Length: 112
Image 1 (cartoon, rainbow, N blue to C red):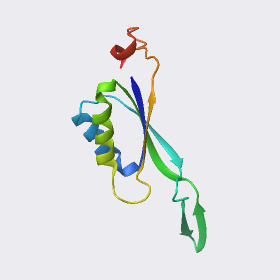
Image 2 (spheres, rainbow, N blue to C red):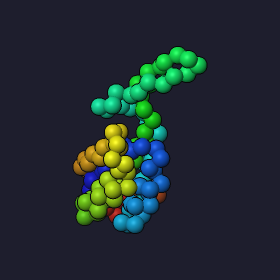
Image 3 (cartoon, rainbow, N blue to C red):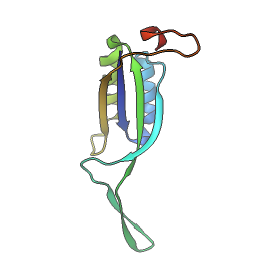
Image 4 (cartoon, one colour):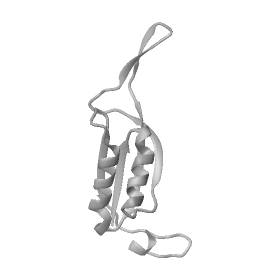
């Protein structure tokens, strides 16, 4: 099993959700997060004064899935989240040692 952690722009969430649904991904966890990468934030003018916004709002998706579904899910996220501009985000993949569905005690891929 693998876990995908994807950081995307907030307005791309619905597009990514639809794209994942089309490749058979049924569940995900979504968190509102803040961060910065190479763009190092940006400056804004508020009431005549310039402020530096160090942390940019982002959405973090967490999806645990079978190995066989991994490539399709990555491709769907990348295509749906891409704007071609700086700050589109990142996709990380990590191994999952175990999973347990609390309600039924199912383990492994059956729990996903």
